[in-house]
Image (tube, rainbow, N blue to C red; front, side):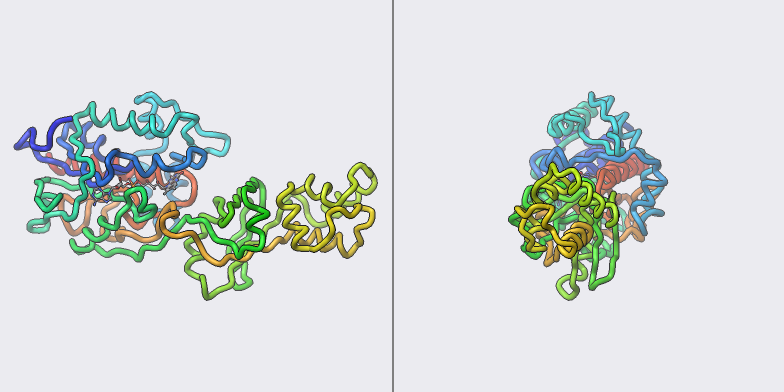
Amino acid sequence: MKSVSGGRGIPVIAVVGGGPAGVMAAIAALEESKRVIVYNKNPWPGKKISAIPPEEFIISEKISPAKMALQFGEKAKFVNPILKAFTYSDLMSFFKRIGFDIKADLNGHFRANGYPIGDIIDAVRARARELGVEYMKSARITDIVVERKRVSGVVVNGSKRPAAAVILATGSISSPKYGATADGYEIARRLGHNIREIRPAMVDLIPDGRYNQILAGGKYSNIKVTIQIDGKSIYSEISEIKFTQSSISGPAILNHSAEILEKLPNSKVELNLDLLPQMDKEQLNEQFAQALVKRDIVSLGEFLAGQIGEKMTQAIIKFTHIDPTKSLMRISNLERKALILAIKDFHIGIKGAKPFNYARGVKGGIDTDFIDPETGQSKIIKGLYFAGAVMDVLGPWGGYNMQFAFSSGYVAGKAAAAFVE
Ligand SMILES: Cc1cc2nc3c(=O)[nH]c(=O)nc-3n(C[C@H](O)[C@H](O)[C@H](O)COP(=O)(O)OP(=O)(O)OC[C@H]3O[C@@H](n4cnc5c(N)ncnc54)[C@H](O)[C@@H]3O)c2cc1C
């Protein structure tokens, strides 16, 4: 790679942050033949995303930009032009050009398709290198220098490095163990931007503990999850759900964790699980009756395990206190009713959430009212651009946030390139 001091006289675009947003911003500007220096606190680009477990990793969603924008709720209007400027299909074409043919799965998620995430990151990095990026590793930017409301440089290790445009792509504060910082918020605040309160989001919840041991390791793909706050249902969805020794997660839970955290500890939060949403109570009763007629299932435990799996069976048994070895023939009507009720409306109390270190995103960040969505440029400082999760933008679980990071990086990179013309 070239040294930072090389090519004097050519205006520099400084990209602060080497996550998906920063790297895509750099590539977009380099493609316009600009001089780009990436300053990254981490030793290598994409360190944070390389820590995402491969089975969780979703790069984007096969959905039109307009529909994708709607998934960002109140930010739909802001993200729409950004997602339109660089769509999932632009992103997949980019990956194809660098050697990764990524196809959507049946649910429309673009996953890594068996490619090691590290290989994808290496190829993106190689593309940036090929275009001539200057990369400053382990370089933490502490400030952006502004003169007469226009950027003129960045501060690294106490000294100023000139820059005609700066793209701030420092990400959110989620997962500090992988290099996340609050620097972007602080720098933007000092320059006059409003910062919306930062709260952890998309984080596993901590159940009250009654069923932790029993359910740990259980993963279910077809459960109706209803979130109740102080007895009121706020959301209901058929979703995947996963249990560990100490936590519970899954798309429906992750998407509402921020809302739930706002209510705790003052409100009572419960997850009501319908373990067999495809059957109503009558149909489930019919299943019991049929099992009795067939007589090939002897015990209650065996019958329940066939319907809801071993771990959930143990949880239902613990809840109803009915002996699982009891023959189905000997289950009373009252017991049958209690079992059906437990299967259709199984309550898990929630007492908290895992700490920030485990959050996949945050609510809050740089107020988008201060940012032009067509370019990513600050409305108050010329030559300052924002990209990715440092902004107060959060999409739902899936590939929405990564796509937004790439799209906003692309938009900021192209706009900064035009700015330094
Ligand atoms: C566990 C986990 C799982 C996730 N899974 C998914 C998923 O499957 N799909 C999805 O769409 N999203 C997922 N996300 C969210 C996704 O990772 C983010 O939306 C995305 O990484 C945001 O990209 P970014 O470039 O804006 O920020 P980041 O990826 O956070 O990159 C920011 C970079 O800036 C650097 N930096 C910070 N401060 C400074 C500074 N002062 N100077 C220089 N550099 C600095 C950081 O070290 C980092 O390298 C997940 C997140 C986590 C934590």
